[in-house]
Image (cartoon, rainbow, N blue to C red; front, side, top):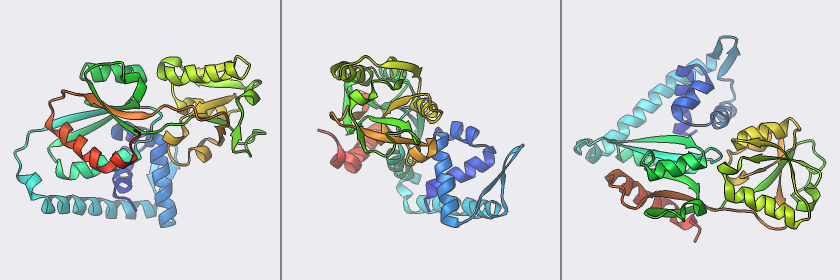
Amino acid sequence: MKLSSLRNFIVITRCGSFTKASEQLLISQPTLSRQIRDLEQELGVSLYERTKDGLQLSEAGETLMVEAVEIVERCDRLSRLFHPAAESRKVTHEVLKIGFQTFFNIEDLRAILDRFRVTETETEIVLLQAGLHELEYGIQYNRFDMVVSLQSYYERISGLRILPYKDNCIQVAVPSDHPMAGRKSVRMEELIDEPFIMLKRDSSPIIFDRIISRCVVSGFSPHVSAYVKSEEEGLHLVEANQGIAFVHSQMLVDGFEKMFHVHCLDIEEGCISEPLALICKARNGKKSLQRLLEELDKRIMNSLIR
């Protein structure tokens, strides 16, 4: 049982809805739903009853709420007890704003940030979802201290520090009852008669252009039936049998295929990919950001893309 799941359970309960909790925690609703579902499966109980007035704790949920609050408070006290240096350090409160693209599953990064918060009690970390252009603008004009985004998009901008983070292959998402749903891969030429659901080009221009180019090489121009702002929106359309979508499946929350009733296929001609990176200004003066970058170097350098 993860402490972060208990923390989020407390917030969901106090907010009375997944929507409000998602906004407060800056975590997607599918991720929160999955965490609660995992808790329920682990404990073998239902934690909520859904009524016309919103979420209501079940009897088991009420019991867990009491215990969860006590557990979280005890853990926080232990953290303060075993990190006296952080408590005695002169408080110079800093806020680190970290932006990430809407499709990105940041659970691994969030785990690192949770550990960072234990000793950096004077640092507040705010996570914000945004589109590609908003992230670019934000990092250049100091709205964000760091962003998690597509690497190549930022290589043309001077004065940035770019840490390659992980690879990012595109897959084809089809409805779970689609004739191709039982397969592991598909050739691009087999998609000639399929309606495409695509992210708007300004959300991911390099991937957009590569998909179109791959179609042209395969001998056809795709019929795009819908342009969407997020991969979640696109997956809902796939679920409704409105077409197929190209998704950054490695970056989406675990279990998203079951969540949206879709099936993902590899592209046989080769991976359409674009690495993700951690990007910040090379001369950002916040000491807490420099300490965070050192922590990230220690935790994830082994998995960085060279």
